[in-house]
Image (cartoon, rainbow, N blue to C red; front, side):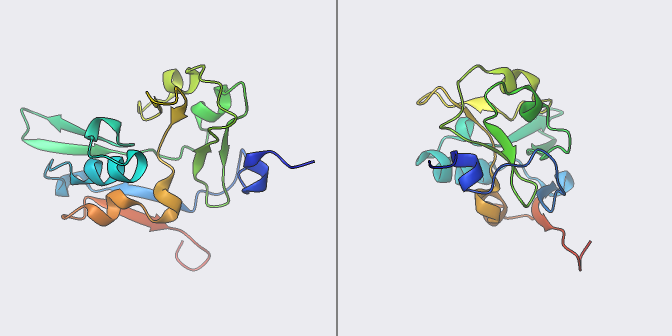
Length: 157
């Protein structure tokens, strides 16, 4: 018998160290939304910032901008409320959604404190940042360094 998708791909943990995450340097963000374009292209095949897995909050009549990314929460509410067990954490601490197991109940969407779990309109399944396999397109595309990939290990902390 074949193991479930999340176990076969090493996504079976509910706890563990968070070693990879995206740090935001909001003071460097210009609000250009290139990160959202790169994300949406990677995830949906088209340039649609509304379907990216991160949000740029434009504050004070566009005087400053704040990128909001998935925190890969240590106590991830989205994972805790999923009745199907479709949301798990991989070995790098990234919280992932298995589209095969997702039942589309929307509980994870309701409970995400940053509003970063959304429903894919094409599949009616939950989606969120999966960090592009630890090579995030948003980080690579950001021209100002407002998004930064942090990798914590034994030697760097």
